[in-house]
Amino acid sequence: MGSVAIFCAYSIEVTDEVISLPMNTLDLCRIAGIFLDNAIEATLETAYPSIRFALINLDAEYIFIISNTFLDKGIPYATLAKPNVSTKGHNRGIGLYNAHEIISKYNHVFLDTEIQDKYFVQRLQVSKKNI
Image 1 (tube, rainbow, N blue to C red):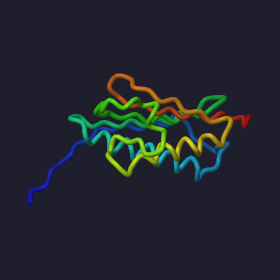
Image 2 (image 1 turned 30 degrees about the horizontal axis):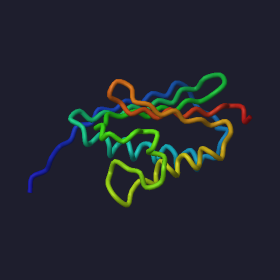
Image 3 (image 1 turned 180 degrees about the vertical axis):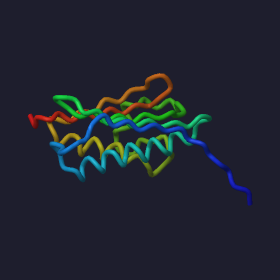
Image 4 (image 1 turned 180 degrees about the horizontal axis):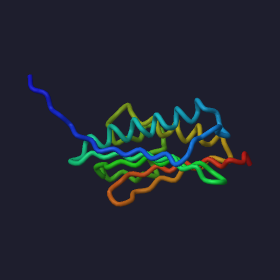
């Protein structure tokens, strides 16, 4: 059997050291893991796979941005946070739902999802002041 080499472009940007976050570290890791897992799976379906990750440390907030190339399958991205809605087939679609459930526990954490220049973008904003 032959093997197939897949090239995936990626970029990682971290603007400053993060000393502490005003949210449970396990919750943040679960959210980031869901977003990264989805990004990897989606981008490998494209002709030119690309993933970008940025962590921006601002005065009032941290911003985590994960963006990836994807194939538009016609599912409105606003519905992807509902349970059992997935671009990956049946018996899937719990990841983004779980991420939204975790985020809803915090009144100072916000998620913005959009499609921007052929990239699926997840922007998680964590206010440094726990409101």
